[in-house]
Image 1 (cartoon, rainbow, N blue to C red):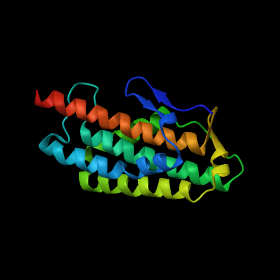
Image 2 (image 1 turned 135 degrees about the vertical axis):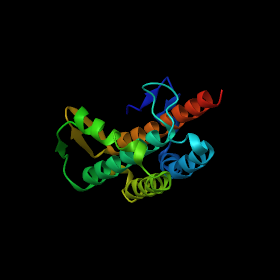
Image 3 (image 1 turned 180 degrees about the vertical axis):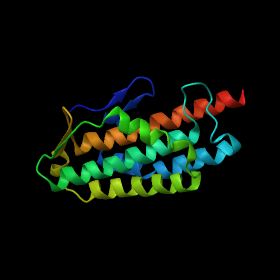
Length: 169
């Protein structure tokens, strides 16, 4: 099995067994809530050109979790579904609205999607976690989808911590 790894944020999917992976996915709402609560008036401020604000990263995480809920549901209920690649234009159009989002609504959605993602996966037997889906040219199984969703959130939590630190220094 190949696990998601990231040198930039020290994420290693191999560090998580089934239980701890699901728990960590469930905890993302609380983590984002705590971090955005510390952002105060800086929640919408970009710390540098080309770097998203805390709210933009949170809204992105909301969307990634929702997308992964869909992906896991599809992988578990259909026989190896395939979808076209997600175009950069779709990502960019979604990102254009992130800064206008309501922080409380974003955190509520991150919480709901994290709980839903973990719940869908938890309801499936271990053997079903090898089921997958293909998006564009890449196939991911349920475990990989969960690891990616968690990694994306944790990575961006660190991005926000760095950004807020930069704004305050």
